[in-house]
Length: 260
Image (cartoon, rainbow, N blue to C red; front, side, top):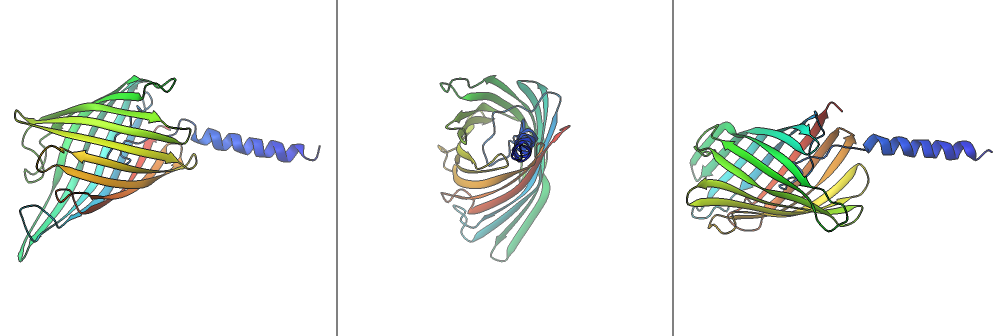
């Protein structure tokens, strides 16, 4: 009988730990890829962060140095149903450029977008990935040095395929309509590994308009920490793999779901 109480105590503690992270928050701003999951019905999820980017290898402009800080990179997500959410986002941008003795900086709203995500395929037996359709409209809000002067629609597929109980492969394919002669493509593949219910790591490979002369190829990786069932912290960074992409960048973010 003396062993009964310790065993019950361990089982009770394990149940509390499991319950604490059951139905935990999943974020879209883990790296460059978007997640397929939808925010719970009638929940508001706020994801925000700050990033820093440096680039000194800009094609066609020797000796140009550029640094950019994105402040309050904020994404608002609201679940309308089990399979559908509304989305809105924006950020503040500070960009500083230096070319020999010439210096220039700009601080502005870095655009705004509204959109939605619809999960239309749920993984059951491993044959098909979890898949959602992502659509948004980019609005011309902010300085024309940073933001396009036109309304630009964007859409595509975000998917995830389980590899094991602790690993999954996320992938995105998105297209943005710039004008009649220019469609900008984005693709990404992201490997996520969960070390525990609270911690995970990822590595990612992404490309932005790879067929265009100014297409970027990027590699990055990072960590996430689930502090509470509705609170997550993210840290990641990466570098460009060609001279069009930034030399390196780093980002810290937080996600919170309301109510819990």
